[in-house]
Image 1 (cartoon, rainbow, N blue to C red):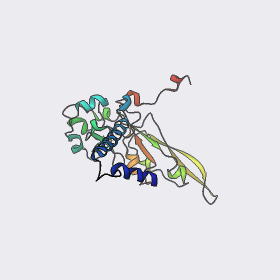
Image 2 (image 1 turned 90 degrees about the horizontal axis):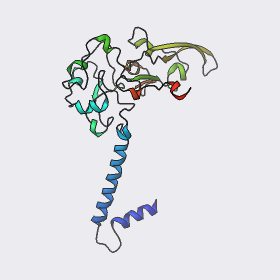
Image 3 (image 1 turned 90 degrees about the vertical axis):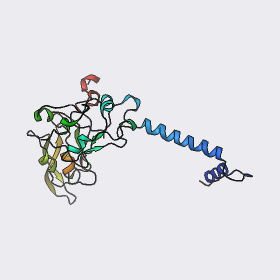
Image 4 (image 1 turned 45 degrees about the vertical axis):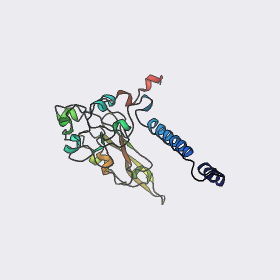
Length: 242
């Protein structure tokens, strides 16, 4: 560490010099900015040909990402009409080119199951118009995942079925498995451990929003399985010869 500090000191104020060498400082600054910019762009979801990312959950009816970014004018109309305020502006989830475009923050709120207002107001059809509520309720915007290391019945032998209770689907997308677990004192307890039915879950996020594990929910939604992006769905096992 001391060698590094001495090197930096000599770099900016070489022996015999009267002050900072502006030429060297500019070269170093340009190098740092260039490196940082490269890392920033390579870390974005659109780098390397990808057009999806785990936290990039677009509103129901959103079209494919590349065309979505071309059409979206960042007017904020979908955010204004959202009754739960789950639609928020992106920061860097979609890269610099997607800055301030709409994304669902399921850690903050959830997509109301019986609402389709955002699908009606987009002036450029970056979010396509959906005619019926029944159609909207079949659009997958993502998929919930149970974190068994944080879920109360899975990890801590404590009863909880909050996520299943709040699932708005008639045929619940979260089902419960009754199991007997061992408590810390050695006693036995029957709990109901939640599982997600990937065929039914649409990624509305109410389970994540209502989870009693409040700092980082034990059930969370990512964009995998989204209707709008065929490459962001589960691959079939038989494609790999399984």
